[in-house]
Length: 132
Image (cartoon, rainbow, N blue to C red; front, side, top):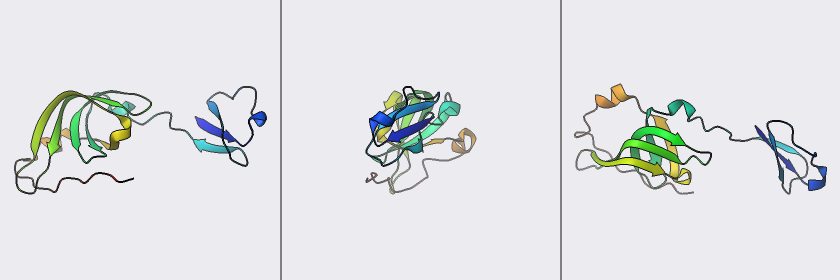
């Protein structure tokens, strides 16, 4: 799907072609931009994912759903708290919703590789918040 931008609303067609949406903007000429119709998360539903939030938290859980704003629902989730002094703490969250505007990164978690990690011996600095 594409987003069409027009400098003057009178130049818009009566109805947009299939797969197109019209938007009035201050541009000089029509502009075609890719519109994010799918977030690419469809293939990750019911898979274990890792989410890094804008405030530096790492949340792991099973993706149960999402919407057009990339708000996500995780089940069986836990937060991994990293420290340089002790191993990774895992705080149980259970069913958890994360707002899309608070998500920095979403990635599929390799469960086999993850199960082979000894998180109690892993040391790392906590992530700093994302600054826009």
